[in-house]
Image 1 (tube, rainbow, N blue to C red):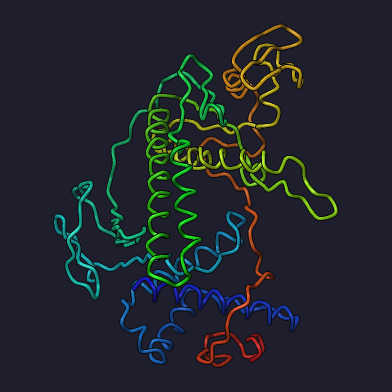
Image 2 (cartoon, rainbow, N blue to C red; image 1 turned 60 degrees about the vertical axis):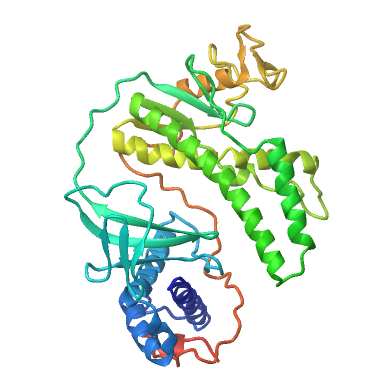
Length: 409
């Protein structure tokens, strides 16, 4: 099921890319609706007759993969995400919909082609709701099932707590503008990092394709999943507390992609302090600041709190009292001493206060009023990856795309 859905995603993604480049080379444009979900679904029906193994998978799962691809392209053209990429081996997940295709009864779930399967129910489904779809996904050796339920929720009153500013850092993961004790994410300890390096060496020493190498890869992946889940659990608890107790939350609008870019440079202009920058990048990513902000965004929208994004430039050098900005204000990593007014404080606490008092960034909006329209950098449609030849590809014009726009053989 999961492999067939992954194949359907990659097949129609490749076909869209090749048809787009062929139409661009011919100087024409694709007709409206040629790449819509309806056109892809019709072609999927024809493919199921030409490839009998596709009939072993449930049709609703394949159709949901096409809907996901259509939504990914819509977000790409709207500037909300990068160009969709292929799904790789091991990315096992699929979603089924339609009341006749699945069902949930206690700790049993009925999946198409599989029948009733028992699962560990971590939480009860809302009573009186309508079950829309069921998603099955795999992480390592474990399979998970999630149910999407449409139900009514009580509107909670907006929090009345004082506004707070938070500073996202490395030494202190999250520092607050008030007297709250800084929050430290449970990142990997030195012992756990050494254990991860040891597991990585075990993988590199095994013969490629052997069963021992597969088991070593699974041990390494299991260790990494444990560390990631621990940080995610802590981020959930922190953001839930903030969104439910604070009326306004001011946070830096960090660009982590740019902050964690490699410092190697080019052959003509090599970078400096490459090893130090690589270590800083690992520590920044281990704290999962992007995940914390994403969790805050949807929880603030749900609770009625206001999430305000601030310009992160020079927050570590700005005095929270007189707003004087100078590199000399921070003589060390932990100490802040303003050279103008003499204000002295912990550097992270001062930065959190500066985030709270400075004006909002140009792209910042309240979380309950809408989403940020920030385009992410990603692979464009012109940067098509090479694919192995597939003699079973449908003939030009059989997918709803004109023959002149179809890729050449």
